[in-house]
Structures are given as C-alpha cells and as structure tokens.
Length: 104
Image 1 (cartoon, helix red, strand yellow):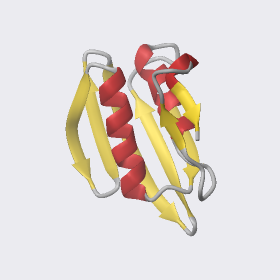
Image 2: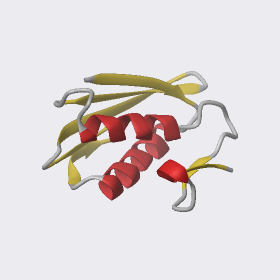
Image 3: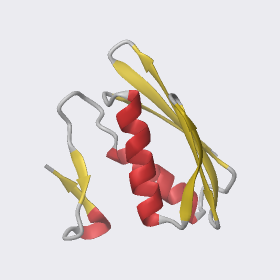
C-alpha cells in the first residue's frame, strides 16, 4: 500500500523517526538508505520511505508490500501520525498512555 503525508519535519528527521519507530515496533531492520529514502525489511514485509522537501514542508511517502490490514501497514500509519504537521508540533511515544501516544 502507499501512504503520503506532508510534514514540517526536515527530511533527515522524518527518515530517522521512521527507523526509530518502525524498528522498535516490528522485527524489521534497515537494508538500504540514501539522503532521501530508507528501506526497512524483515519478517513482516518491506517498506520504502522517501522524503522530499517542497518549500517549507516535506512530503513523506511510504510504500509497503503488504495489505492495509497487515501489522506493517498499521505501524506505518502510526509512524505517519507521529510526523509534525506544523512547525513546533511535537508528538512523542509514551509508554504510559493508551496506544503509546502522547502530545506534549
């Protein structure tokens, strides 16, 4: 499946967040990367995340080889919600709240 989101995060930060969140939540690891993309693969499938700057925002696209209901796709959707939409937005994972989501 394909997912796309605009974010205020710099390209490098968006890709680093993808690696941090997805490798923490799934049994996958980084298999390839460059300055605008990262590919993660493992037992739950493969996802390629690309990010490109367009003016004040970046476009982040994730492409998986699984169905929308797979664990990989659900966690990719979760990652996309963690990207800041506007400058100054902060979203962080927290163990203490339902779903591990906290807005600070």
